[in-house]
Image 1 (tube, rainbow, N blue to C red):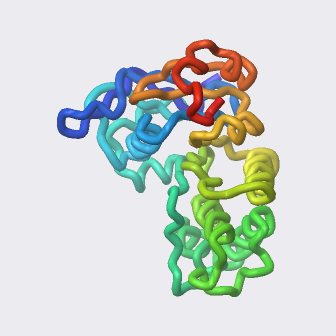
Image 2 (cartoon, one colour; image 1 turned 120 degrees about the vertical axis):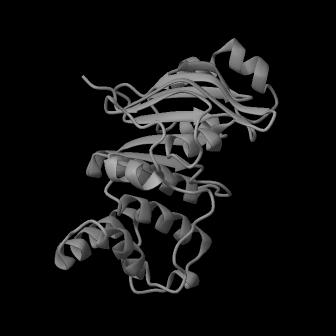
Length: 241
């Protein structure tokens, strides 16, 4: 079985700062693979390197058995990987539905199919009732959901989610967890989820990688991560465990 995503010895420098250091992992059979770590641990940099926004200084990235190292973002997206941003970036002067039709319009789809597909995504995400509302009028949580919906409109096989529940509490976090479960269950999309909160990631991820200062310090299932002495020693008092 071909691994969906495999990263080997990935290293990235910004000047004299090493943001990623000899990082290796693969998502294997996990439908949701979690990555946790404090701010500055390299999580977002990792996503940007995978997506081709930054070029790695060393290492390899394979998607479905094919090297994607050095490919530009648009080609990586066409192969089936896309990501959400920590700060939503919709077209504020377009409606919710129109925001999804933009990425769908470049995929050589018939307009009727594109509209039906967009409506399916909006219903799954919980934005169908505001499909004709301009994005600039949405509430913060709705903008978060629209960011995910726009990424799904690229019809990915693998979705990289960069702190989708940032700033959320209580009911909103519960709803975001349900959305992630629906993406995997109903759309068949694999997810790599980045966050700094273990309590969130542990509820959806089958395996979790813990990062610290650009390196992997531990990997296992949620129970193993929670009980790891290495993780406890590094993050004691950080709010992650």
